[in-house]
Image (cartoon, rainbow, N blue to C red; front, side, top):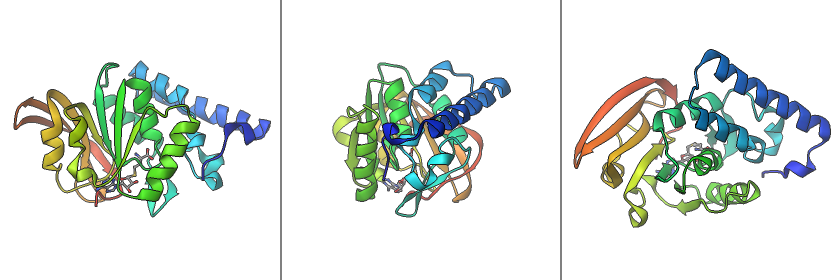
Length: 220
Ligand code: SAH
């Protein structure tokens, strides 16, 4: 599914580099993304390794792309806005629900020491593993299973990010978040879910804020 950067023609590489730079400048100049660590992670990870080869020329287009199994790799701006909200620090333990292509997990691996990501579609999880290896990020732990359960073996997590929309944040995820930790998740209907940021203030207690409306594939 994914391709090696080496197999791309020179002209294609130049185009992709220009498009990547364009997106970066757009975020910087509009001040939409002002977290330098997030921008640095974006520059470090080749998104073209995570998109389906038939969409290669759209690797840095600012919209979602199909990745198979009826799923999508999210729009780059959405991905970066979520990472900015998540406010990851280098020594932290991160759990992602919805591995998809592995792209967001790759960005997380640039930001933090330990990244666990859970995907329910076995084929997508396998491709994500390949993509992450190609990007030199084989340390990411990819788990095949239902992300609504979280992944208790490596809990608690300092940060949890959900990349599919549910009607509510699953209880297991809230339980597996460390006190003081942050959780970012789109909550509500597929088209028009609200991006929630939850801070766990004590066991069973959260401060929640809303950060705009988005569209996401459902958390099943
Ligand atoms: N983060 C991904 C894109 C997410 S798309 C990327 O960077 O490419 C949402 C993903 O969530 C899809 O791959 C979908 O299969 C997965 N998903 C949906 N419900 C899930 C569940 N209950 N457990 C784990 N993954 C789930």
